[in-house]
Length: 175
Image 1 (cartoon, rainbow, N blue to C red):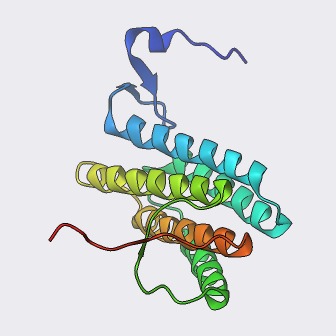
Image 2 (image 1 turned 60 degrees about the vertical axis):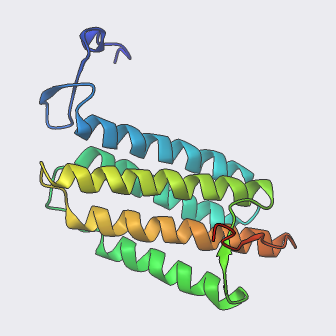
Image 3 (image 1 turned 180 degrees about the vertical axis):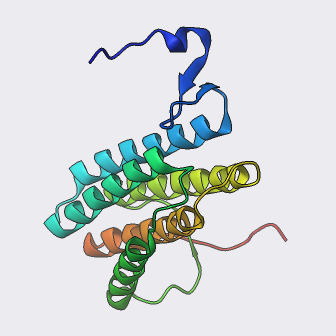
C-alpha cells in the first residue's frame, strides 16, 4: 500500500466511508484532533512507570482510533468504555487527598504531559460537539470525551501524588 495518494495535493481527502471532502471540513478537523490526542497518549505512555497505567492508556488509544474511524457511524456503543473510565476515576480519587481548590496544570513532567492530554481532549470534545450540530455524531463519543478529560485530570493528580509533588493551587486575584 502506498502512503501517498496525491489527493491531498488539491486540498481534499477521504472520510472512512469513502466520501471526498475538503481538508478543512470539520469532520477532518475532529479526526485530526483525535489523532493528535492519540499521539500525546503515546508520549504519555512512554513516560509512565506503572504497567497498569500504560495498559490503560494503550487501551484508550485503541478506543480513540476506533472513534476516529467510526466518528459519524452512530451504530457503536462506548457505554462499557465510559464505565471503565468512571471506575478508573473513582479508584484514583479514593487514594488522593480531597481537592479543595483549583489546581494549576504542572508538577512532575509526566503529570504536566497528562494535563496536555486533558486540554487536547477538551478541544476535541468542543469540536465534536460543534460537529454534532451539522452531522450526526454518536452521543457516546461526546460522553466518552468528557469522561476522558476528567480521567486525565485525576491521573495527573495521582502522578504528582505518587511522585511527592505538591500541587500548585490557584486563587482568584482579579477582584
